[in-house]
Image (tube, rainbow, N blue to C red; front, side, top):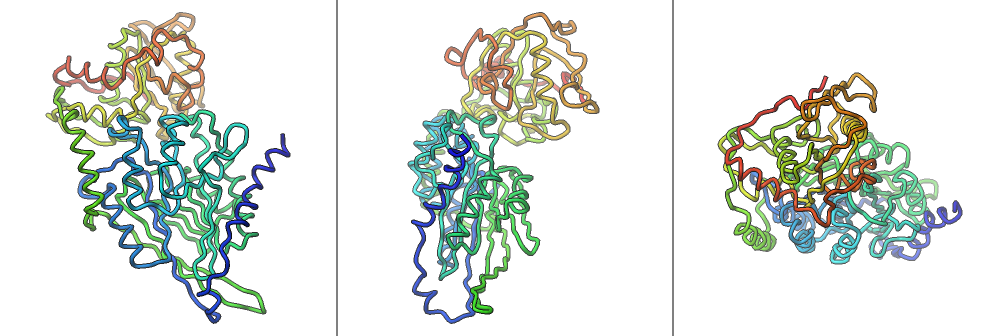
Length: 509
């Protein structure tokens, strides 16, 4: 078993060696020392095709990339993941529109993000095959260790004799937070070490990792795996880091910004040995400052117009503010979280309801007196999840709630909004023993009693780490369940006006 694992990890060496480009004629003609200027362009986590507030979206991203490519032939557009989902349109075509739009100005390399797997392994493979760009997934493998078709481990670029090797990796917890099926994710750090070694042995002067990983892993890639440059997504942060030896770039989200890393490589010779040094400069392009590309904008409009007929239908009105910002729905009780959980519970007549904050995606605030439409609900619940009904003991419910509270005060996509119950979370206690005073139906929870619970099929299948639910008895399973977004729409329509408040369902101390 160990020998087989090593064989798969070392395989990129042979691939890279065969793919190497010969020394370019321009490089052979140059006298030492000489310089080469290369630009890395980074944008990621753009799952929505349209702009918002005059910035972001596929058309503005395309305009930036086209301008940069025209200015410097030595450029690489790297996309560190999250493209196919979640969005309203993705609920209809499983991300096909985003591939069409990105193909109009294709990246040179793309590393899949966790959301590329939201519709299962078959859709992932289909969409990646449709992409007219290189897909790098150095740590993506089938369960038996074989390389996934269409996904490469590395790619080498030659810029006038300066060789830059690229690898791509996807966060290991994709197995918990998405639906990759039989696809597995090897250790990011171990994979980076082995692939970087192979690339350097193949002549790479610099190794770049295009990754969809958390910030802590990004720094480990530099400090432990020895990667020179990390172009990252996943955290939705705008950040630039350079310590004189290694660099890290992340471009926030939705193509609001595109970050440029302009690198001057100096090629020289000392004591008969070739030397390559590099120095970066960084530019942040706010896409509000550029005009949208007209060709891409026309395709975006085509899709947007097709949605409007179905989605811009009024279903109710909110009298109070509704907050779907990530920091809110992933860390505490909100009116919107309560509304969604209530709608789900009412639809299946369950004792309790709970749904994860990571499934609430609008990341916005609805002001009082806002008219609510189908579009609004699908913006908040874009994944197409269904509303399943489970039978759970009180002990199992406590286990669910402990898992929900384990990371507080850190935000967590697995944090649950609840209905039909109240509880207290004591964050001074260690994870696993934080839940106090759970009340269901006006009485203290009975650990031995069975209760009915509504939740979404993603969580019921073990998503966001809720593995304890995979063995629960299904009273309504995913194949028989209705879409949770539709159940919430029905609930809002029945209410007419949303005029509720945070009720103290979840007390955090």
